[in-house]
Length: 114
Image 1: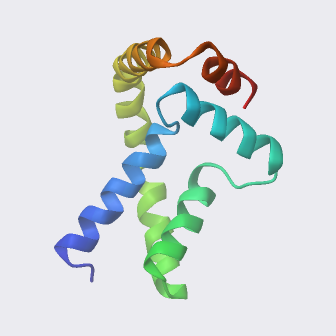
Image 2: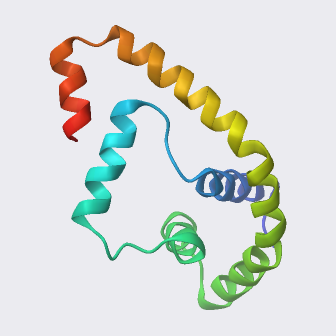
């Protein structure tokens, strides 16, 4: 059984993956570069399970149980994310704009090519 700290860590990790994308122009560029370098990288549930396996060192029985839990809640998590995503995207766009105003033209061009 997971203790309270581990449970919150799992919830945070799942929420982070549900969000799906980091904020900021440089972070987005890094994600695009990583995606181009590793197109075979797992997505969705498989990606979450890979990360949880690494972070929590799950045993085979735990992996099966955690996968079943994530699958059971996936539809509801997706529905929640769809209601939150417009606000998240708006906030991310605002942050990107504010960060971009702080960059030199050279820095801006580097983030565009990443």
